[in-house]
Image 1: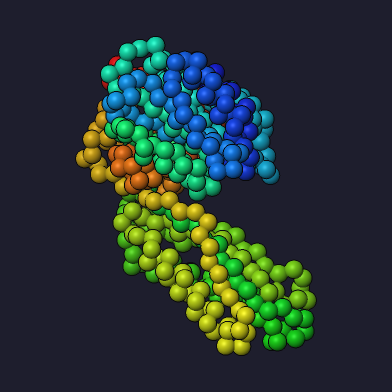
Image 2: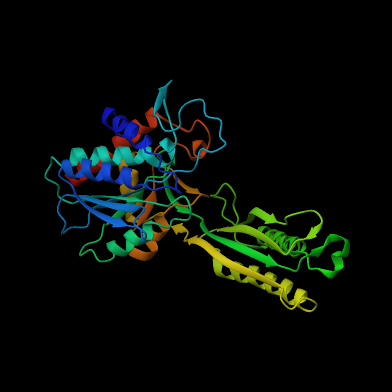
Length: 382
């Protein structure tokens, strides 16, 4: 575990918050992996500010196993940390720092595995895919998947190392994030009926969304394997108005749909559009310029791997565990499976309950368990 902790210390020191560049971390990882004898391929973002990195060791004419992780972390702004979030602090069997659980702990263990593997003759390759902008909608990995689609031989299996306490996870919800802009007509608040209040328009839409949520909860698909066993419709941001004495001409809602694999998102998205169109239509009877505009911010598919799939028994054999799970948070796994047809599970060290919080940590025994799993993977590929 020493090598994994040493690498994790370096990874945490790179403040790769999603809004910022990850290039310093990627350059360091690339140099270290190439020094170990691995072959790397850089897949930059369109603007060149960020990059994915694809790392391979072993024979390239065979499928092998893909390990997947993201390099970005969520912000620490406004959080009360007792330690420096970008300096690894070890205490009482825990390693504290931003991204330790989500998910630089797994990335460190995977890098340590590549270094151990590079000195051996492998019967099948090991690949490591490091992405950017996972935390803001699994955006960056799509460019790497485009590159992987051109590979002569694709990986046989994929393990996404998000924190699951080393339990093998076969399914997670998909997510679609929408931005809704309600546009009314401003006027002096003493003449309020002469204007069109955009906040009121957004409030009417909120009522419709809550009605839709109740319908989904009572009549929609259910899966007891999830903490929340139904699809959720959630508004997380509402912004509108500039002053109390002005009828506001604009109000914005940011919302998301987190849907079960068996609950397609398209009909739900269509219902949101229908609610918006009805509000717009009513408003335009008196205010022809009224509008309710919907923009998709991001979307990623659910993961739904058959529990009898070969990847499930393969990774259970690596962990030594028998239980399977499902998670409500999303990963890049659904994209690997949907776009590249790579059978995928999620399995990694740490708890999602510690992610995104002040004093985020990963238990060192979780890192040790991950190292053991990856050592077994090396034995299989050796």
